[in-house]
Image (cartoon, rainbow, N blue to C red; front, side, top):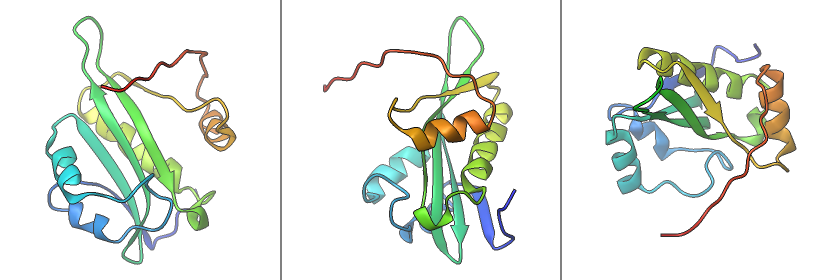
Length: 143
């Protein structure tokens, strides 16, 4: 893996959330709101990993422990972003590995991730990890 020693990959909790005060462009879809970050971190089923280089967050991955009453719990990876100048350097792989390690620690038996059919970069990344793709239909609506 091409992740340098200067890159730190860690889980976000109440004690490390302050690191999200300095985030590179294109790591998140929008600006971080401190009230939403605090609520996210406070939820016991939420997991966020970040990659920090020189005091700047250059990557993030988020997941939710999906509890099931009829089968083993799963980790749902719901977001992954890496700053363009840090892509293809092992950052996304390191973030995903940390999320999966945390998922195992929390009792998850497996994980799943979805992406848009036209997101060639994400599809190539997940295939490079040896993941199987399944065809599915996704519905979305407002509340």
